[in-house]
Each structure stands twice: as structure tokens, then as C-alpha cells.
Image 1 (cartoon, rainbow, N blue to C red):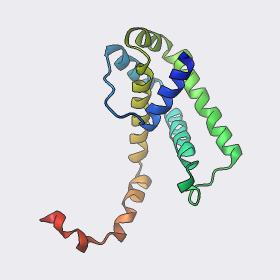
Image 2: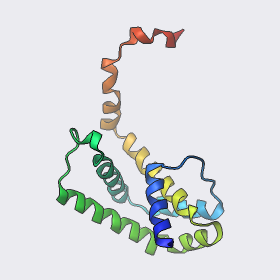
Image 3: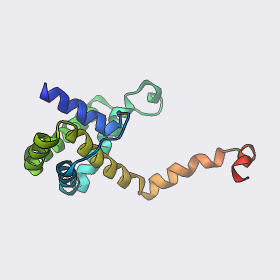
Image 4: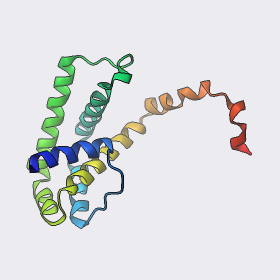
Length: 149
């Protein structure tokens, strides 16, 4: 049961699938800090790649996102190694203490924080910033004139 809760918590935190605010206690905060500080830039890139891989499986994205089965397998293996390293080695003691004292939601909250940090780094990239603004060329601003009133 604990393994299932862990997997659900982890996946929910990555995708933000909860309705509400997860309140973090001091041990969750320490665990979250450990995850963020113990995750290398390469690890954060692997996390982002995994998130994109998972989202790419949604049917509405099939026409714009093609990832081979071999690439998906590689991405899954990489993120599995990152999660294992973080939870079994780098942040093990903080995870154990936080779960013991604050419950299973610790995993959700801490990995959500890690996902947000990794996502923010992605958004800070100049190429991503440029891509974010590309759609504005096609906005009909005359129809939105009420915004400036």
C-alpha cells in the first residue's frame, strides 16, 4: 500500500493533479530543500524530458509530438535512476523523517517543489521564452481592446 501511495503522490505532484494547497511542515520543507539542492542540472533536465514524454502520450498531442518507443524507454530509465538516487541515497534520511512525522503527503509536496524548480528553469531559457511569445503574432488585438479600458 505504501508503494502505491508513493507512486500516486509522486505522479500527482509532478502533474499538479490535486485540488487544493498542500501545507508543508518543517520536515517537508527540509526534504524539499534536499531534493532541490541534491538534483543536478542534468537531473532536472531528465525530469523535464520525462514530463514532456508523459504529456506527449495524450491523444490530442499525437500530431505534434512523436517520441519513439526506444526514446520513451530511455527517458523512463533515466528518471527512475534520478528518483532512486534522491530517495534511496541523497535525501533518504530527510524523507524518512518527514514521512514519519508528517505523513505520505510529504512526497507529493516535496516532488511538486522539485518539479516547479525544474519547470522554472525550463521557462527561463531564451528559446522557450521566444517560443512562448510566438502566438502573439496571431492575436487579434482589436477584438481585445476592452482590456486596455
